[in-house]
Length: 377
Image 1: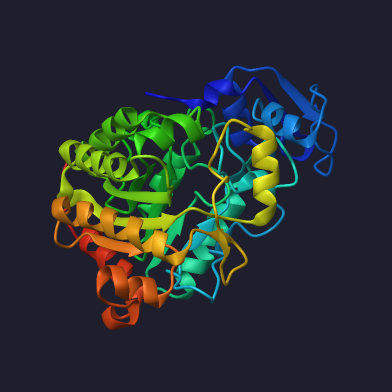
Image 2 (image 1 turned 30 degrees about the vertical axis):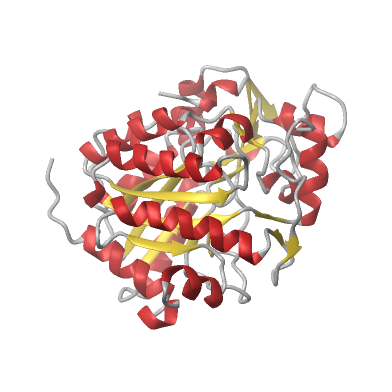
C-alpha cells in the first residue's frame, strides 16, 4: 500500500512535549533521527536553504511534534456566499508529505514542515465537551482540512486512535479523507460504524500529473475495497474537478472503476467540487511546478474571492460527472456540491438544498443510515 510517510527523514520534537507518552510512541515507531527543539515556542531549523518554494519541498522531509495551543475542534471555514454543509474540522496537524500542484496549503500555511499535534489528551477533552454539550446533534467531523488524514498514519497512528475514540459516541461520525492507501492500522479497530474512510478521486490524467507522490487510482480503490470488507463506510470526493483534454472520458473511467471495485451500498456520500483557488496560490504553484498547465486557463473571481471556472464550464463538467455517478451509485448515496450556489444545484441536480431540508440535513440522514446498520465482522 502506498505510504507517503516514507518521505519523512527527520523528526523534531518541541521540548515541552518530549516527555509525553504519545511523543515517545511516535519516535519509536518512526525509527528516524530525532532533534529536540529548545522550547515549545521555537521552530525546527531546516538544513536546506533557498526560496520559500524550495523550503516547501524541503519541509516535507521534516516532521515537527508539538503542542496545539489553540482549539482542536472548529467549524469548517466555509463561506456564506455558497451552500455549506456544516462540517466540523478536527485539526490534528498541518501540511502533507504528498505534493499536489493545486494544494491550497502552499499558500495558506506560513511554515514549510509537517506538524503533528501530540497533546492528544487535550484533543479528547475538547471533543468530549463539544459532543456532550449538544447530544441531540449529529456531528460530522473530519481531519482532512489542514493535513491528509492518513499520510502520516504509519508514523503517528493518530487515525487508529481517533477511530477507537469516536466509537464511544452515538452523535458523531468521523471522516478520514486521504489520497494515500495506507490503512493497515485500522484493520482491527472496533469502529462501530462511526468512521468513514474517504478518498479524493480524479481522472487518472490529473492524478498522475498533478497529485505528486500520491497513491494511484488502483491503489486507492484497492484500499477502499479493503476498508469496506472491514465494515467501514466509504465516501469519495471528486474535488477539484479539473478541465483537461479528454476530461469526459477520464472522469467516466474513474467512476466506473470505482463502482467496479467497491460495494455501492457502503458509499455514504460523494461530493463534487470544481477547481477553485486563492489568487496567491497561482504564483507559488507555477513557481514550484512550471510544467503544469492547470492555472493557464481563464478563471473568474467567485463570491468568496477564489478563482473558478466560468459557470457554464462548471455546469458542463458537473452534469457529465453526475450522470456517470448516478448510473452506478446506490439510490440512497448522497451526492452533493462543495461550495456551490443554489443556481448550480438547480441546473445540475434539478433541486436546491432547501428543497431537501438543506445540505446538513441531507448528509445527516445519509450518516444516520450508515451508523444505524448492524455492526458485523
